[in-house]
Amino acid sequence: MSPTTLQAAERSGAPPPLSDRQLEIETPEQVPVGYELAGPGSRFAAFLLDAAILGFTLLLILPFAFLLVMDAALGGVLQLGAAWILALTIVAVFVIVWGYFILFEGLRDGQTPGKRWMGLRVIHANGFPLTLAGSAIRNLLRILDLQPLPTGLLGGSFILFHPRAQRPGDLAAGTVVIRERPRGQIPEETAAEGPPELSDDEYEVLRAWALKHHTLEKGARRRIGGRLHRQLQRAVPEGPTEAVLRELYARESGRRTARGTGTGSGSPSAAALLRRQRPRWEAWRTLLERARRRGLPALPESDVAEFAALYREVTADLARARTYGASSALLSNLEESVGQGHNLLYSAPPRTFARIREWILEGVPRLIRLRWRPMALATLLFFGPALVTFGAIMVEPDRAERVVPAALLARAEAAEELRAQGIGYGEAVIAEETMPIAAASILTNNVQVTFFAFAGGLLLGLGTVVILVLNGVLLGGVAAAFQLQGQSMHLWAFVLPHGVIELTAICLAGGAGMWIGSALVLPGRRTRGQALVERSRDAVSVLGGVVVLLVIAGVIEGFISPSPALSEWTKVGFGIFTGLALFPWLLLSGMGEVGEGPEPGPSAGGAKRAEGES
Image (tube, rainbow, N blue to C red; front, top):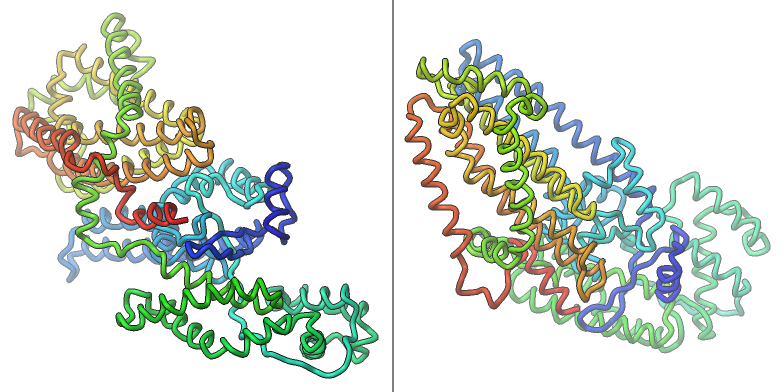
């Protein structure tokens, strides 16, 4: 299917046939390159493979952790406490479950093991390589794509009916999943004697088979081979073996090349181009393979310079080959190598510690200030219901039973007795020996909640609103329950050390989700699709900073907030200290570079730069 046909299908709203969905992008050299979009079948198969690998990994980790815990409990040789082993296990499972797709796709050029096995790759819809930020967006929003759990009907329906086979996560990240072309050899220039044996229609059928048969399963190859034999019986009476069909294709291509009417190399001009440039194309393919194996930055400087020069030449040759009417086989081969070179040459800058540090210290707070409106709205949606709930319960205490969970009401009622015994809120909940487990559980739970708040933004922001309001109501209700018992200090001495950071992080995560939702409700002068991609990139950068804050808050909540060695006023003072460190960072850091705009994240700069170039 041509790009024109795809554009017409997009305008009409009707998806093109799954097997014909194509994406054509224009490189910065203004040469179009085509990609075949992956369909739901191959993507689902890749997902199942990845899920199997993920499940197998967890099955290995959990028994191993159990053995370590038993070893520690029995006083084994490993001098690591059982609590620390369980804490590390909790964090490891969380990172594997949430990070598998994000890290593989973001750090391995858009391929998980399952996608690599199925010959698929994720790229940005403008043709540039997938960045870590893009991978984070599309995979965090997988929360919605999998609904209703565990069917994944929402994401599957989008892939099935969207003209570019994009699920909601792809729409927000501006990504597509493509099927990689097999790495075929450069076509030979053949010129057999005699007229063509096949009609033009028969030849087109045979050529389509020759270009795609190796991508099919064995059963499908046999069925299609049988049909070809029936259609081309006069030319292949001996049987539909693949070797015979390949020989017929080579022979027929050569005859058509000699007449300048068909494909082998294509027209006589294309054949001359093939003869003249073959050595250079072979050198390019050799260098390209080295760069794909080792990474372009790992090559010597001279090789990188040669890579860039050969890429420009081969890209120009692709444009010439189209003008000369080259064969589909030759064009496909050149497009494949140009597309792979394009992804390597225009990949995002290397992720260095200095860039990550700059992003955390300056980029995130600068971006938060720039997008202060959704952050302020999220703060209002969180603390507003908290204050209203607090006031309502103070006016009518019976309302507490309808708002606050029974376990928290019981803690409020027991607070006076605990304080008389010198036991703080945190000490009653978290034993000293279980602090590592508590810290790991708290930080992973809080990060997961922010992921849901982020993903809820794609539901016109309503999912984010619900999470903010419910958490605000709970906070206000618990605060009122302790106030009614005259034990507010008992509660806040536990909450403030980590709460200043944690509650701020919740509001920032909610603001990121609201910013995504605003793209669908108030896109401004851009289309909703354009606004969604741009605002999702901003939102995921803020979310990255939020995750760092929540890790810090989780450690404090696990070790400092429940510490029996610290007095209540010491803990309150520590909370004030965290605020004195946090808010100057949010309000002042990176002030000198406001005019330049925020960086979208530690690895998204390449995507932003690339989009500008395209």
